[in-house]
Image: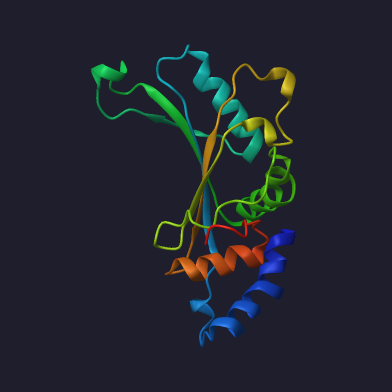
Amino acid sequence: MKPRLYEKYVNEVAPALKQKRGYTNVHQIPRLEKIVVNMGVSASLEKGAIDDAAKDLAAITGRKPAISKSRKSIANFKLRENMPIGCRVTLRREAMYEFFDRLVAATLPRIRDFRGISPRRFDGRGNYTFGIPDQTVFPEIELEKIKRQQGMDITIVTSAPTDDEAFDLLKLMGMPFSETGK
């Protein structure tokens, strides 16, 4: 069974984008390609910090995270080569649509004083990146088991060539952009 948001994309969003932008080919219509969730963890924290972050990220995404390691040593940051410095998960296809649906419908409204996310965080190539300061806004996280607050970055990669097309795609998919700022 296809995810609910994928059905919405096929039945509502793609035809609306095709009609609004005047695309002649279905392959010109922007679509979501992948979502990357990244948690950076300070290398100076205790050894269990990476494991805790990986457990939280696995609970949030439903996938086992890959551990990112440092490429070179930097003495000022007390960082050695091949030290674990974070973890990340790349979501595609059904898992991506399910995560995006949960993010928009359940997680973002749980952020305190939430008035929408900024529409100014596009990278110039149709990709959108934003940060969440605390992992406890996700309903999958049990508050009693949290040892430290950990933020994360979420990157939504689209096939849109421009930021305006990507903005239209994400707006039609249900992303709650704030009205001020653009």
